Length: 185
Figure (tube, rainbow, N blue to C red):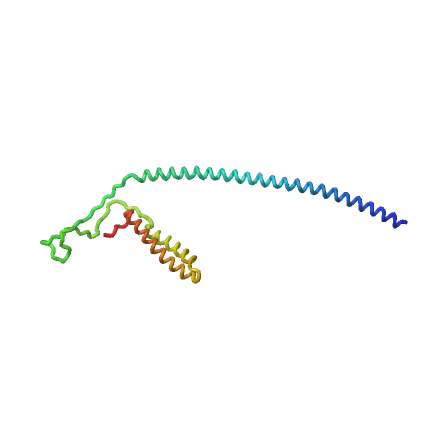
């Protein structure tokens, strides 16, 4: 009889414990749902804050670019004033009566390249030909390496040489247009 009573108490205890766990599990499930929703709301708030910061950043970027362009226009307006460059050249004329040295005797002008400029001269930096050579070499090497499937190294070398030559030619013509180098005669 003691065993039956003990088994009965034990079964009652287990049944009440199981029901208690079910109620606790339901409450904890509800709490987890609420906690999850709270986290989702927090994430949405953070996303909105990030979007707001992004909009502020873009607006500031536009304002900065406008002020940069205004500064560039102001400096270009100041630099567009004509500068006076004085240059002297020595011109020699060939005369048939005075020179029998076998030179050019057509009575034209001879420029010996001894033109001197007075005043200070600014360094002009890297020429367009040099920039074109560098950009062409790098770009040509990249394209050559991509295009050549079997031997990428050889493709890069060939592309670099072709790109460098093309970039030099284009840059040199730009230098001629700017007056950095004298055009061919």
